[in-house]
Amino acid sequence: MESTTVNTHAVGRAAGARTGSWHVSLPLLAGLLTFLYGVSRGTALLADGDTYWHVAAGRWILEHGAVPTQDPFSHTRLGAPWTAHEWLSEVLLELAHAAGGWELVAALTALAFALSISILGRALLRSLEPIHVVAAMTLAVLMTAGHLVARPHILAMPLLVAWAAELVRARDRDAAPPFWLLPLMTLWANMHGGFTLGIGLAVAFAAEAVLAAARHGRVAAAARTWGLFVALAVVASLLTPHGPQGLLFTWQIMFEDSFMLGRIGEWRSPDFHRFQPLEVWLLGIMALAMHQGVKLPLARLVLLLGFTHLALKHVRNVELLGLLAPLFLAAPLAQHFHARGAGRKQFAGGDRLLGALTRGAAPGGLLLVLLLGGLATTSIWSATGPLVPPEQIAPQRAAKAARDAGAAGPVLNDYGWGGYLIYAGVPPFIDGRADMYRDGFVKEYAEAMDLATPTSLPRLLDRYQIGWTLLPPNRPATAMLDRLPGWRRVHADEHAVVHVKTSGAPGDAIAAAPARALP
Image: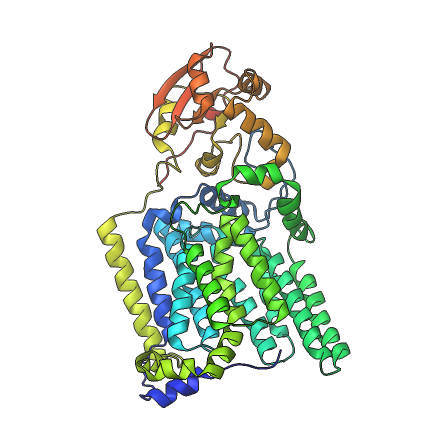
């Protein structure tokens, strides 16, 4: 692709004021606002059961000085093969938790998200007018908000945006791929399984480079350079404790465990009966295509369609579209607006302030933003009080009631509460590591929870020697336990119901490993 970048930095200089020692840039301001938005969400950042087993896994890794290769947590799959492919993020989450409790976990999450938006903004300013960049960053924040929780995908998000931005930049300049990115791939592969997306992006832009080179008779050179980059990216991704297993993880999730994906909320399609930022994005893209007539290179069109498909299929992928699509579109949009004169007219019409903010931040500006961010965060936490995991995700009252009632033996728990149980020291029946449990086990569990047959639940209780249960009040299995001989309800609140076995309770696993209270 030929270079189509419009230099908004030059426009910013023409607009105004000289940079002072306290100058603050647009990406830095966006990062500050995004960070404060994240911090202000408070316990919403902790409203995901996976957060707790990630913290527990990080604690296990630090205590044992090794990355687990077998399940050390559950009572149903203890010792089964397990790839802790997000081990580095888990260590970071545990270090934050140990140093500053859930407040520091939330701050780390908000900081990673803010850094991602700042990187996105800086990359877009290479091509687009500031007002367009502000709109793109705002929509990216909205499209990520539904999946903004303290989990490894947020900690690895800056790597995703930086990787994509630099590949796009290389193609916009018709330059060689940036080989300095390769260490980022290794870091990414140790933080989150989504690194395979980075390899896919490298392949896509390599194809774009080869297609562009064909017009100038330079196919061999482009294929050699970009092919080497892709090969080295794959090699870099293997530099993890689990080697090639990380590459196989994506295949397993996407193509082997279809039943499991249908049962997990974040893997379902978006619900358009409620407001979805994705709808705004889709309508905007349709308007650009139909009214403005924006055209994309073939490779980027395929990428855009592919990410749109993923976002419509799985709600967890909406954030990818919000973060990556602006990068794919930036240069073609800049070329389109520049040819029509729209960008220049818009800037001349009142974007002087934003234009001045396109320059990089001065050291004093960075210090000022850090100071303001710290003061605002302290103020937010003082007003809201200590962060406490929400009861609907971490059912502490129900767990305490179970201990007080003498619950013993293995537990049958709700899928979403397995992470809390791991964190609290109780081996769960199931948790968010669905890739380890696999489809067959998840199907057996789901049939018992939904009472697929009259014997589904009793058979499961007997097979796994269940001694107590921790389930939501609206589960069909909960109602059956009220009627099942040998079981007694000992606790019920708006979130959880506890039943204990009243005769022949097996073992004393709970007594041997009592759940510690969440801080």
